[in-house]
Length: 366
Length: 224
Image 1: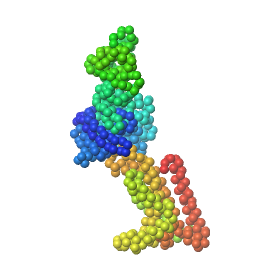
Image 2: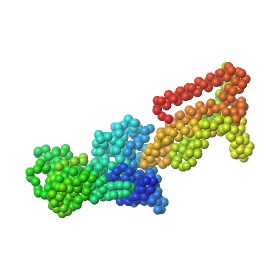
Image 3: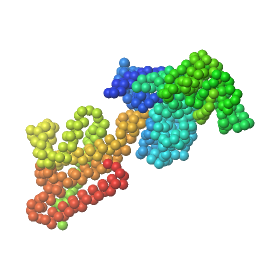
Image 4: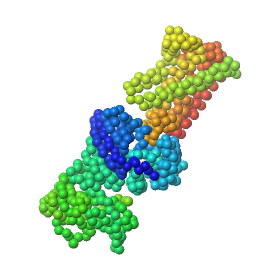
């Protein structure tokens, strides 16, 4: 359905000075999967995305997508937005109100010179669950429907790169939960890179493969999601939401109503899941849900206990607490948030072997 | 009853208003587009020049247009260079003068409509491979349609209601520059109130109906 040659990397460099705001980013992003640009509002993530789209022209910039130079101000190359083979989804969907859903879907497809068959028209409409909406006017759609049509409209141009600017921010929680599974399906089935701007830790944990952390117009950190989330040296970007993401596989449905999930570092027991054995899932373990013990306790109700090695400590925003980075035997990471007093009393330091007790595991859909 | 002369004036007035409205939509649209989107410092001065007829007495505009069209004015020199008839006291002359005089009534509603659309739909169109010209015709124009309808109606009605500028530039020549408003003036001067009533009453009813239509439409659509 999509061009395989699109799976090459994106290299970008943007320098921009507005009064009171400077953007200075160097990005080297993978050629597939979801890259989240994450940061507080005003951190420059949306501006960076608009630079990639060519909607903002930063005076000193370079952008190479795959083997194509989209922008190189040093040599005067600047492809205007309409010449860049990208798709973009805005926060407010931005459907054209004077056209039907069908007219909206056709608008870009026609101009990109793509036939419905080439674009995978039926597949995309089914994937996004909007087949039945074709004759409707945008004004009659719900927020979630509008956003799904906007995603389809962008995809039908067969873009080399999909840009999403907080596509869920304008939706209420119910609509968000309605649209997230569709985005997860896109992530798994598309062969193009997606740049996803968000300030929601939940969305990032659920959707991203690669994380770029932005602060004050600069990149504070970037790397694969699980690695970056497990770093304790970063500014408290996630604050109370600090934690790690694990990719797990459904292993066994136990008789007592639990489901066993396997991952590199061991097994996790959760309450029964409807997914089939072998299904991949992503789960999130918050640092605040992990406690530490020197000895393995058998007199506890907590089921998920892992032996781990202490790697590093960091301060947290919560007074009297520290964030502890742990490695499991295979190197996969956990974060634990404990009190400074506990750390002293247990005598934990770098290299200590301890037991990590996981009180809660959040499963993040498929 | 209105005479043949009155009907000639009505016909001439309608012809003038139609031509002027068409010209204004053609000329006013790019000006409105530019004013709605430019970040240039010229936006203020150009906007002010376009708006001048809103505040100036028609006699002032008529006076300067007459000078411009006269043998020593820039327009006059141009027409004589091209071997054309001098503009004052011709139908073409009052067309040009009316275009200038009614300009703000057409430019402003269109400009407001373009501004109300905002950047976003055009940005979305650009990410869907539409060139700026393509996006102008397929997105901006259709979305600004209510503004165009308002502009055309007000431009037409305003041209029909002109008097001062027409009198200064066109004088009072039957079938060439004698419009309804001028004809009414003549009737009143000649104390022929019955014939003045026919035309004046007609104008009153026409203008009321136009405005009624405009305001009812605005209320329904809730637009500019």
